[in-house]
Image (cartoon, rainbow, N blue to C red; front, top):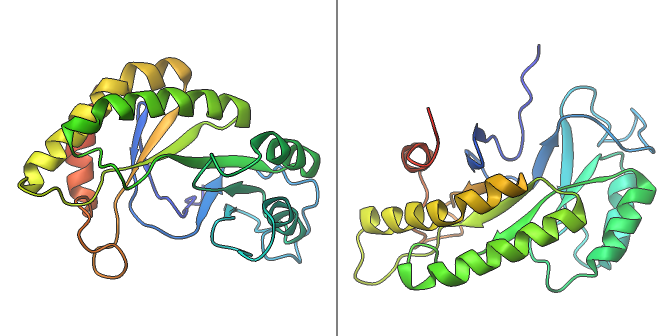
Length: 211
């Protein structure tokens, strides 16, 4: 069997995952696009990709970005924010085009998950994300650790991230939602972010999952 590489080469660990890279695509297990054509760039024979519509075709309305995704033969989409989009309209159009909504962002950069003062809000946002995931028929949502916190060591910030994830673990496990913990590229565009090495993500995520 050929390996299924992806935008988010993640390691499944129960309800949590760690991202190994950060490119604007996410692989799908099965192609579902009714408009698939092998001559189109998105119609790859083995690995299937989802377009990040936050990055592609920024000048177009969201629905038109979804349509462009299908036109190019891709099987799905992913996006970041949910509060600035008509989610029901997106679901309807994706269903019409046979596209899968692969993942969205449940918790962004700020306020930081790496600060315990934000953990109650984090839990509330994850509860909201579970409802959104059900609407979208989506099984994955990304969470971000947060930028460096003044007066905290990296070890302390990572411990706080672990605590936050432990807090919501029963919720996402019950809902069948995988949280994707995404590291950032501090050398290029996310200087000052607290979580940036995959081996560290693995170390902390393993604390949350049964062996």
